[in-house]
Image (tube, rainbow, N blue to C red; front, side, top):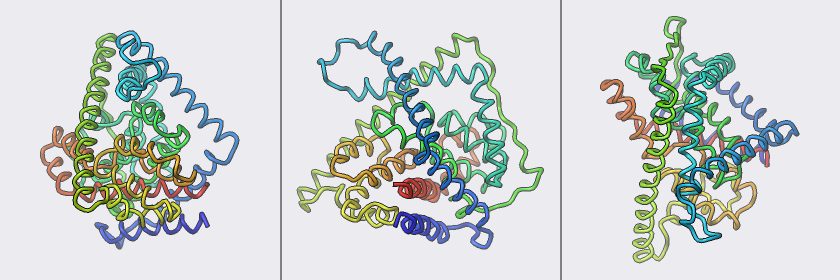
Length: 393
């Protein structure tokens, strides 16, 4: 039965992607099939082998320890601000991002991350048949996040073809940054977060090969990675701290605005229609959730969370999801959890187009024109990843 829902989920993505494809005659079926097989093997390895489960567990424990280390600084600055036994989302989930940002800055400074990204990207290009730039970017955006990752190819962006630009932007919206992983693990099962990070790399490239197929010649496939000027060590630490704190404040502000807005819409819907807004959008997304493998009895609830993520952001959706997980089956929790782990929402479209526009006015204007197709592609990538998780439960 799980295999049937794998087919329905993938078929859903293919049909929608085919309808909006830029070049239906040149869809890369071989590449798509290869990456789907790789995803199936990866998800089985991670969820059904001792080595895979141990690896995922170790990663989860590692990030839990990092969050505890981050709490040392938080306790020093904010210790005693909470009543004993209480929990603060800002202190417990968002503020650790400052330390995570410092850690990423440190790993970049000592050239560990650039080395890992370069060679994993090169290996990925051999598997996927995609360009080296696309493969490099798919890996790096899963580590560095936005808008920083665009700065690593700042000289490439102004001269990229529109097709290649769509692919890298889809990867940017489909992935999450390493700085966010620890925060997500406080709201979702760590094993689902880790699995989603890996699956999303391939899912974004699969969707791009449907919506945005193209071939490259050897000359086009040159990769020039921009290296920032090496800052003094403590200046780098200071800038990483401030970068992390900016993320915290931006996310907190968005949560304040979006959650309050969702509550206002709910109050209006309840007053006029006697039904919540989440329920309405849940019915709209329920068929999608069902085709991904969510039991029909839970499809409306799951669809409501999926739609909430698209309309607002993943943090709002994860918080709402946490309120209803006790009423859902393990399979639904797994599928929706993996679906939520990406930046595919309306707000991120603005971040991506703004980041590109700051580098190249012309390319930024083009990204703005295909922004809805970009959001659709990133959302379809999340559907593929969630569907893959349903296969093994």
